[in-house]
Image 1 (cartoon, chains in turn purple, yellow):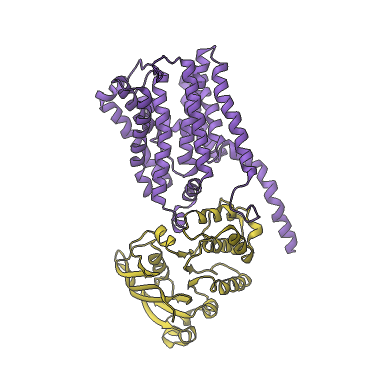
Image 2 (cartoon, each protein chain N blue to C red):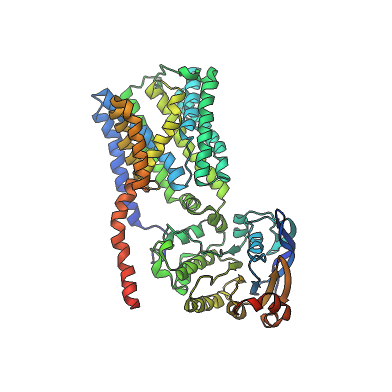
Length: 336
Length: 238
């Protein structure tokens, strides 16, 4: 039933989702293939795809559930180290990947527990401390992580059957992961879980009063969001070939957060666009590494001040006042 | 009289050294509208917070619909059919009315169907605002959205914390009409300072004073009770 007071979503909404998803899926596979002649550019595309997956996971937590986890990169790192260690001790990468991601999910769910007590800024501050502790852990447990030196020459995995996987083929695996990540996020936002998470973001006490088990669904959000972080982390390590504590430090968390905030938190495509703009930008700025952090800092300030809702809501906002003004004006005229 | 719906026995709540409620007993039957009055700080909202699970009491037992609910979480109590509103209007302001209602339906065991939602929305005259941002509605409309979000859950008991607070006198009349009809849909418990609301809605009135029950009885008796007049009603414009 789709009457004026229907609470189910209409077909119209689906069209607005399926068409962009199709375009995105085609581009995710076509761009690395088109760039395969130039390994450097294809690599930039691959890293962008990993960040799309990460940004989608961050978006689930920050955009949809209203929690800003600055330990996101640390969680990705847990999976990366775990998967690399398992692979180097003889396990198949294709088993190490889900195990590492699962490890990250469990860790992320436990590390998300403070969010049950701390809201907004206070949770963010707490997550910053957690991130710092994870980074110190990566340095401290040198037996597993090789400490500050990091682990280098991580090989690309072999195919499940035994053949080698070229970087160009691995690009397509990254594209698959990014597309699956976005599809999962869309499915969540369309499901009752998505409604619960948005309710928690808007007012968790009211959500609880309406019958929603806030504790359970915050934990669910952390489990799934950390799964995104973990899959990305496990894929990142062999793709780059080198990981160290700095690969998963607070700056990386901030970067991923910036992609979500810059693109538009709480929208499916905003963070994807954010990753597509900011990842290549960071490669472009690599030659100007002295000013890179300054530019990033300015970007963060600009986003917070000028576009609190990101690019996506910036576009929406220019359209909204016209729609919203009309009925209000009519009412006021009616009152006179 | 019909069966007991809510039964609180010896309920107390302390905040540090401040005793907010001292051993309150209250029995509410199914279909009976209870009004709670008392000066600011007498413990009315604390009482509702204890019933809805937002606060845990220090002593006492609470039974709702035949089952003990003290120590339960608010979501469990809500799912059992005890819902409430807040003193300050509280909706998901950034979301549309439609989204607000959809959220209210998500974890409700006894949720109403789509036809029921339409009927309720028409009754509350809020159906035409379903695509509006809830935070942009007038206070009266937001109060109606609050009621709609509770009613789609088909609660057994709705506890209303100052439902006409902040409304204009014309809006108060509208709200009283809505609440009178609400009585036929579910059992209500009302905290109010506006005696007009209590007089028109309540079958039984409980007066709190400094965390203790000062009086309890039919509205006509209570509003004429000399102790109540001296210690509470004398101060306000009834």
